[in-house]
Length: 57
Image 1 (spheres, helix red, strand yellow):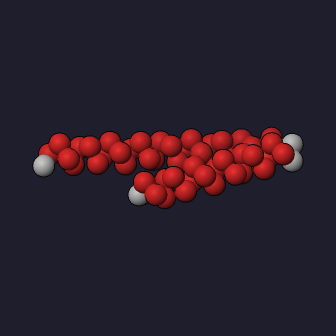
Image 2: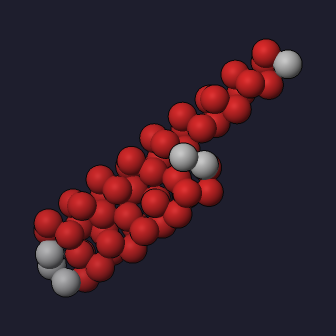
């Protein structure tokens, strides 16, 4: 997954989380939070892979 896709996942999760909060839908809010955190983890993994590639060059 690319960093841009991971960032998009974070944004989508934040929107879902905010919508869930606004509608008092705890399940949607939790799904959004999970999606946002998954996106952050994926972005961190991509950054680490980039650093590893640069260090090997």
